[in-house]
Length: 195
Image 1 (cartoon, helix red, strand yellow):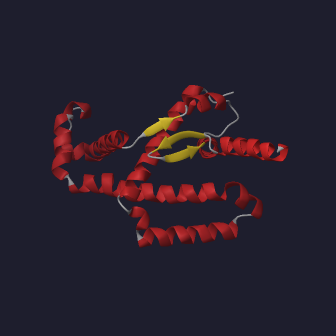
Image 2 (tube, helix red, strand yellow):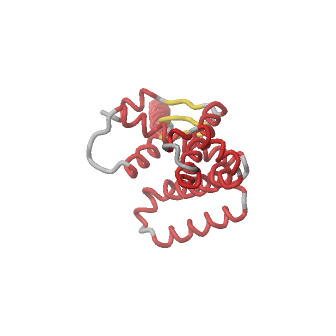
Image 3 (cartoon, rainbow, N blue to C red):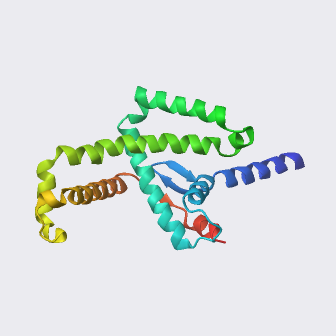
């Protein structure tokens, strides 16, 4: 009986620590391990992050995850070119990684690559192609924001207008994704990460 109780307690402890998710985006968890790994990778240094730092970074990361969700919803993860490219990367990474690194970060690195590639592919469709295809919309954007460009002619500021229009398209896209998908954040876990 004592052995059974110990096993049950250890199972609860194990699943409690493994299942700690900083956030959940459309039923897909962002584990504490993944979030800390990505945070440290993009915010190197030994300084202790503040809660504001973590929340700000988490929101950027959630936006990334939302775009990946949209790419999956569009079926881009089923594309044969994408599958071949990720398999090639995985094989190359495995052959070049020392065994101890394979155990530690391998799955995180592979997942990051796969998601980054999906992000690139969906951004091509949702943002970059649109700017090239929507010359009238770009001109319309310029006309409604002319004062922002010191009333310079469109041809003189077209690159800047295109960049601003891309930001607007992306902002609208993220807003629609945040409305479409359910997002849950574990504020208590974030508080524990700053201690």
